[in-house]
Image (cartoon, rainbow, N blue to C red):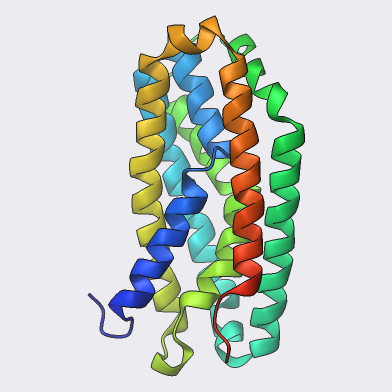
Amino acid sequence: MDPMMSTDRLLAFAALSLLLIVIPGPSVLFVIGRALAQGRRAALTTVVGNTLGAYVLVVAVAVGIGSVVERSVLVYTALKLAGAAYLVYLGVKAWRDRGSLRAVFTGAGPAHSTLRTFWEGFAVGVTNPKTIVFFAAVLPQFADRDAGHVTLQMLLLGLVFNAIALASDSVWGLAASTARDWFARSPHRLSLIGGLGGLTMIGLGVTVAVTGRKD
């Protein structure tokens, strides 16, 4: 492991990332929709595109704000609070819109080529508001300014996030493709997933607001 980052810091980030990733947000719902409509291969291809799109966000955030955050506690605090507020907003919205998850069953259309499926997954990953907010608000918290190389640290943390996301989203896709008939018999089950995800996202937003560096 890179000596610029402690094991405790890396594990804490991994735990927080896992909490966010397992919540069904835009990316997960897109993967589930593909799995239900087109099967396992389309779901896994979507996951790969999605993950690469998310890492583009990591690079953009790390290069764009890494050096600023390294020098400014004020910028760091503003990003953290703004991100926390938006995560709470997304959680409330997910709770209110939980019934719309049943619409994934109406989205089944003709299967796309693997390349098109990949790029559509990439587009969802690179425009996912939940991920954008998480990277902008949380990555800076776990970069050790005293150790230097903040941008490099954020890129490393992004790799950790994306490795977890790749594994988690793949599980969602495989599970959804395997349980297509089970979901179809009671689409209300997707509403339950969305409601629980919304509540968890609200909790995550509060956690982001009250934790992090105190320097």
